[in-house]
Image 1 (cartoon, helix red, strand yellow):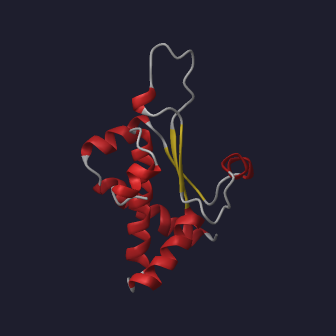
Image 2 (tube, rainbow, N blue to C red; image 1 turned 90 degrees about the horizontal axis):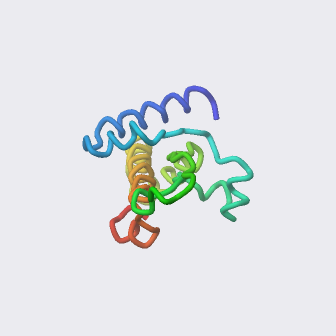
Length: 133
């Protein structure tokens, strides 16, 4: 991915985050939002998915599963993958007949909210019912 496309994507991520309600942006103060071109091979292998499928990933322990009795909680992070989101946005733009930029912003928002949903303990079914599947 060239630098201009990265900058455009990252600008859209910043716009989406700025538009989130305060309670969600406060979560991002404590949970890093990491934007990468694509997931590492070991992540894909562990999940058993193809890189084209993955738009984002929540890593860590959901808020609903945290406990003082847990001996160690791994760091919590939200990952957004530029290439996966761009592929999905391009497909949806053709289907919805929407502009490429509008669809890219829309898919970034859905992906960020999807991964923050996992932080709150929602599973894939919950997120699909809410329109973030």
